[in-house]
Image (cartoon, rainbow, N blue to C red; front, top):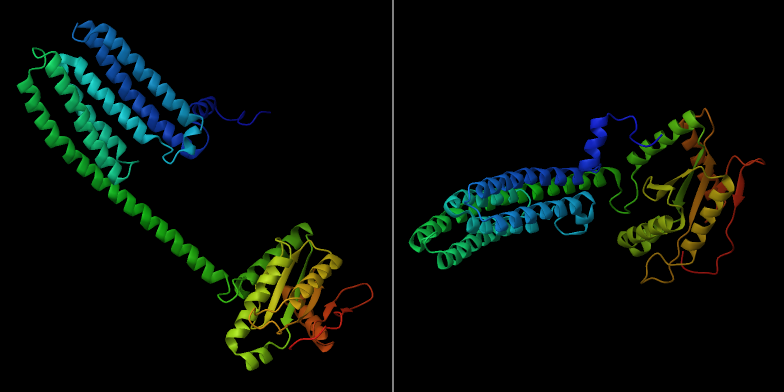
Length: 392
């Protein structure tokens, strides 16, 4: 069955005309609204030709240009091509074309030319919802200039039909009216821009608040509260789908000695670099949280014990191979960790207790130890290679 086959016929036809993507639908809908205005103008041109007020060749050329332009803009918007542009609505291009056609229509309309001037106001009002305040003001100036050129040219070419004095007075009215409309439209554009800025600031503030609520400020890792929620979600998945998970509880060995010897700033830098090493070494699907002062908890989703242990070994090598503080190259830190798999039916509290016991067993074995619980042969201790030396 093809997608959308169950939709009502009118809905499928509407999607075909407007598109499915929301932003495209909105732009195409505005374009079709402009079609209605253009068709009304074309109907007026047809009436003018019927009444012998509008020259027929010019009238048909005007109708052909308007229809071709609207079809072109519709295709550019409906196909999504316009989304490559800085202004996906192509409002500047459409507005300049519309004001140019208003000036041409003024030159064609003869005694009915006064009716075309209101269309300039309509174009500016239509554009102010998409353009910036500067663009709106520039559009108003272009409207005055384009109509002024049409008045000047026609007063020179057909002075009997376009009396120069009458055109001058009419231009004065246009020059006094359209800039005011542009100023009002500019004010609306400024309000719209300010609203967009305030909305963006609100989104940024909410994102910052979310970051503060879910992240540890020092390390940038998930904080304890958020990790508790993620563990609860993992527990629900395990209960519903049987999706297994493991957790590793790691503790930096002797961080208090680093603080005492070098100061808490160095200790904080060691914590940050250790956090970066964890994120660099483990999988993207693994979630790491700062669980306490120098404790970290890793949530490993759908990871067999052996693979989880291999990841902790890589992390141990990464941490042991580099100083956590660049300007103290002799400084080395290690960590101990306990790794456990969640047992079906256990509570999170019980699983965390087992991880704490495993961590304590690792620390009892000395610096850099890893204890893998739940192995078939019981807890397994994984010791690092003897260190090559360095400052503790």
